[in-house]
Image (cartoon, rainbow, N blue to C red; front, side, top):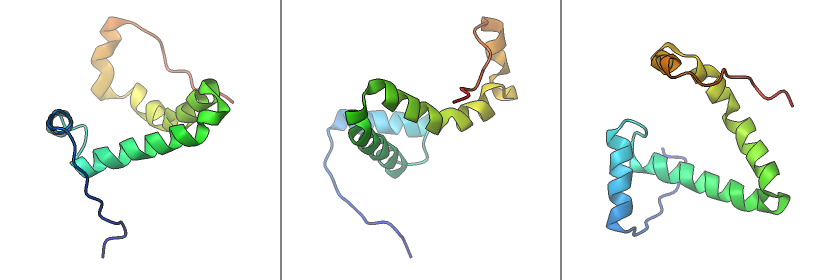
Length: 93
């Protein structure tokens, strides 16, 4: 049994096309995944917008940093080494 609720919404065709591109690129599995992520980000931004942009940015970085740390030096991204750039250094706060 599903633990979520179903919500219906109408969106412009241009948004649907963009969502389909993200799915075809393999970034997301389906539209629900995109909508859930967008809604979570929206709600976090609204919740923490009173704290200021710097604190919001810090909170978002803390949320995604474990993902970045795992993926930053992966073999799949080794081709980026040819472009130079910076080494990943986690924020120690």
